[in-house]
Length: 281
Image (cartoon, rainbow, N blue to C red):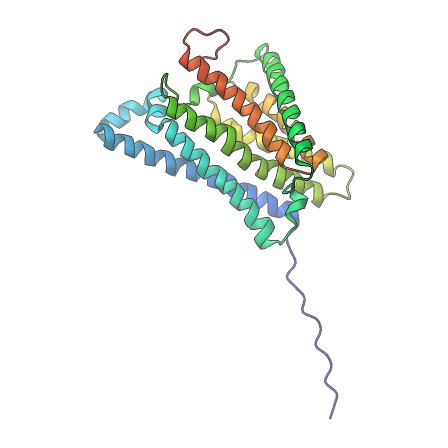
């Protein structure tokens, strides 16, 4: 009787390279962003039609005017759009890293050692981002037209509930979702995947900032370059924060300060007609 030879050890299925998985997930995140935005905003337009008794002919007339179309979506519609799209960013990141690849989330910024220090760094970077944003915007104003991003917010004078909802969406939900996707996942996926290459870290900085800026290009109809340059620079600054601290917390705080200050200023402009320095609304 011949001895039974031991079976060779089972070979597990090879993982995709981290950068390849990230590229696929970014495409999925973009598709989710577009589809969820469309679904949520169509739902709110349908709700307004029912509330106001509008016919399809009335709707077509209103959609010819961008301002009327935005009012049909409303600040609450934009809030739920931000909620849905940023929840998708978080879920796509966590599903890939935690449940499909079983990666350590600490490597992707899900840690907060020395919390007070991280909060202080986040506040400092937030103030610096406001300075970078203002300086870059002033420089771009001298060479190109300014973006009409402020006009894309469906805010009305005296609508304090809508203003509060939009503030929460833009200054809380968006920083959390965007930092987890762009700094937590995209930046660190490239940094880790190409850690043994001298160009790996610079590539992570540039690509994560470019993708971050590209997503925001959907929020304007003119002045695209004047919007993208400041956002790209802020993306580099936030990537540096992630790289330096290894934590998402200061990135989220800095992003919140940048968005929050800008939106509070916009709300003041809307509620105080004739206030100096306000953008075109």
